[in-house]
Length: 182
Ligand SMILES: CC(C)(COP(=O)(O)OP(=O)(O)OC[C@H]1O[C@@H](n2cnc3c(N)ncnc32)[C@H](O)[C@@H]1OP(=O)(O)O)[C@@H](O)C(=O)NCCC(=O)NCCS
Image (cartoon, rainbow, N blue to C red):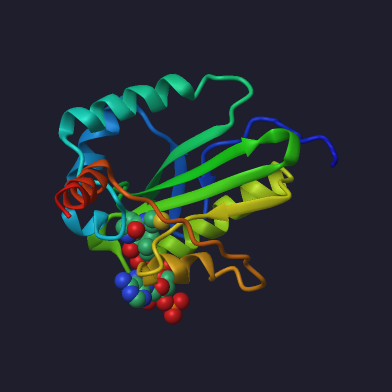
């Protein structure tokens, strides 16, 4: 394996219609305005967060922007034409020695199906492979999340897929109580 180059990613990144930049703590309100929509969470095993949770997340994200070497890129995506935050973009370098990474994205529901998810995925895959020279990049989503699968596959070619099942604590507790009664 060749050594991973951890030269900091140059931000912001401009795509055709979007700017991908670091968050500031002042972005918390804009992020909360769309992540409070249950539709955003329909294919993820999490509930919509509270405003306080988003504030805390933004504080954590901003604090971690200065960590060196920077492995976590949790970024804001802003429309060039309106300046509005329409998505987040995530690039995590998971195992620098083995050049592994993970991407993620979450577009505000009112901006779905306008090609933003694909535009973001293209930019973060470029950052992963061209800037960081990663060897393998993963993206996780529910098999029911047709939009996310399409976004991942926008970069045509061979993607290896793995099924990961997860269960919540309350579901497991429910199963145990039924088993006890049986
Ligand atoms: C999944 C998600 C990122 C898609 O973003 P998007 O900006 O709507 O995606 P795009 O507009 O680039 O669409 C890409 C393709 O998927 C299709 N698509 C988008 N949403 C779809 C849906 N719900 N069902 C079926 N197809 C869908 C688009 O029509 C497009 O098709 P095309 O390639 O034939 O043109 C967005 O729905 C989202 O953020 N959802 C909530 C958070 C989430 O689930 N994130 C992923 C977690 S792993």
